[in-house]
Length: 167
Length: 122
Image 1 (cartoon, rainbow over the protein chains, first blue to last red):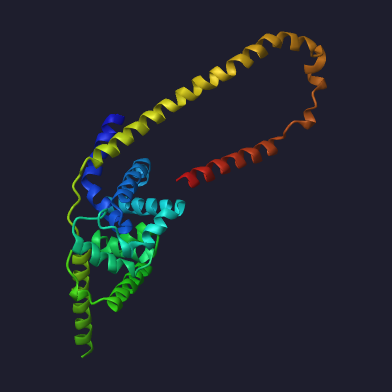
Image 2: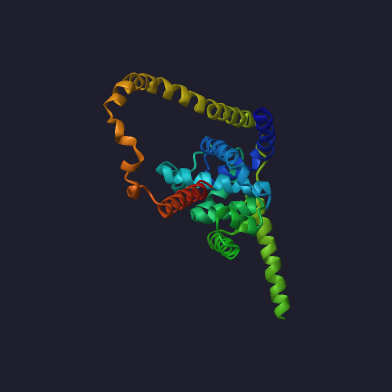
């Protein structure tokens, strides 16, 4: 029974690992750290699977678990804070394949706060609805909308986003 | 005029959103053994949970066995020391025993603590 359960869960991991790892990679800008956090997030998801009510999408719930895991780890260790502070000075040897995307995305994300960064990634990279983002970040939909508005305004004021190099 | 402004604003918003989506978009991440690692950690966790209770019982029994045997050996001698009339009903301090209301309050407190504990766990 447990064997079957873990095999079924493995199928869920295989199906959603790209989005969860992508979300955490964009959030931390550190491949190894993001993958460690993604593993922890999937283990938390395994433990809390019974709490998923079927309301909302599974990936929305999974990204909520991933975001919570990220926040818990960040609280536990100053290392994550330092990494986030250094987002503007990303080590290219460590990070992502596409250097254009790295530099553009890093510069955009650097002007945002942690919360704005997470909300913008959930919206534009993961494609979650405002309601799903609200569920994931424990925020009302109105607050999510205003954070996205504020984030866009910050990016607009800091860069000409029409002129960026596409990821 | 107003509707034109709104339409232009919406069009601008859409274009901006599309630009941001393109900026945030990235190639799907290839499963380079990630799933296998997670599943093996899940299976390890299942085994640890399955074994932890029996192991705890065995360890507890091993630790508790020696003092338990000693108590069992001493028990007849200890019982001989107790006065024979100690357990006679008329000598029992019935008034000092917990009353029904006290027991009910105690049960309610235990239930409340259990429920709060479960809520916190969830």
